[in-house]
Length: 139
Image (tube, rainbow, N blue to C red):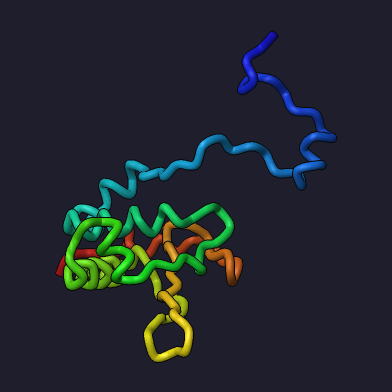
């Protein structure tokens, strides 16, 4: 008998699960072309950690609705709140992320900013990935 990961799944089993294939354990991919880009190489270590914290929230269907506040980023990345703020600014400046819905304490309920990763397609507006960070150049 074949190991479970090599066994073929029946069509009826796929239909029961909504036609979606099992993707295995969740993971984050950092492609070589991204790691070699001018924008990535110019990022601080803290900004890279915040980017990974944002990407960690992406499940393949929620880009444009990724919630991460400055305080949560600071706690997860073990950096100061002001450093987390600078990291978000770096990521915005180099076009790795876009702000879809700004957060703040001015609302009656807590609301973190919703982010879009430009590396992946926009799942809200169903648009192709812009990968705008690849056009970033140091001035």
